[in-house]
Length: 129
Image (cartoon, rainbow, N blue to C red; front, side, top):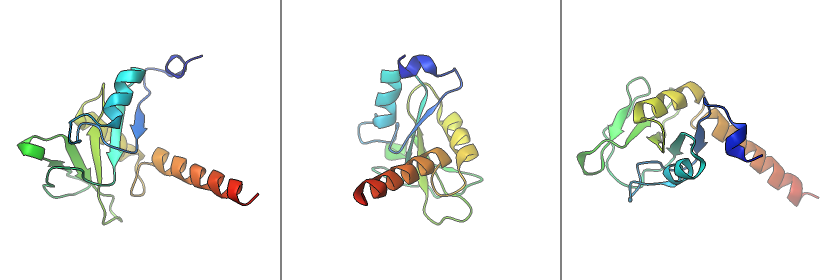
């Protein structure tokens, strides 16, 4: 069964990369959303372009390339380094930010952090055999 058929209507995919905040305004989250037909969000650790308008977790600020808001920069209360949240496809910027805020305990969203941890564990297990 294809992945897109096994997911329900509340599914959203979170990508470790950009959505609309991209030099071409079409990052990996946008491509994936169009391909899969599922709402997608890009969560990046680095700003590829544009300027930051400041940051705050409770009142996120937009990042404005060419004076247009494409992304939201925010950080959790304990982290000094921000992340950049942008809509991919099938979701608004404000909805994307709300989803990520609900899933973020550490610097990155919990699904992304767990995937990174699992990949690291698998890599270490493979190299220690």
